[in-house]
Length: 64
Image 1 (tube, rainbow, N blue to C red):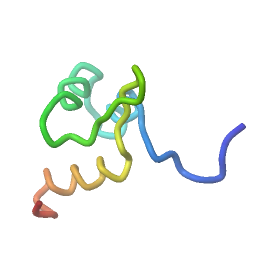
Image 2 (cartoon, rainbow, N blue to C red; image 1 turned 180 degrees about the vertical axis):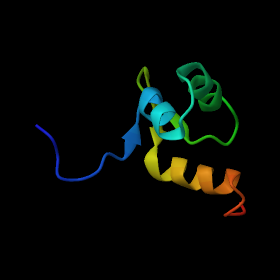
Image 3 (cartoon, rainbow, N blue to C red; image 1 turned 30 degrees about the horizontal axis):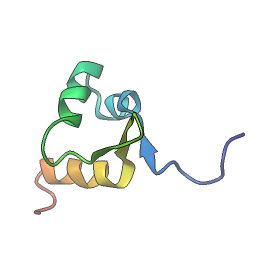
Image 4 (cartoon, rainbow, N blue to C red; image 1 turned 135 degrees about the horizontal axis):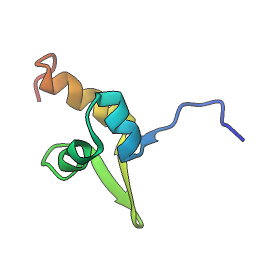
């Protein structure tokens, strides 16, 4: 059953696809400072909103 609202979090594989990078590169990013990743139990997740903000910061669109 699929919800009618967008997912708030992404898996590392989903984030890799969105960013257009390989899975190993995505895992490197996940473990870097400032990347919007967190764990729930043993599951590593990325905040969708945080990822959008991180991308804008990397592109120089947003400052801090």
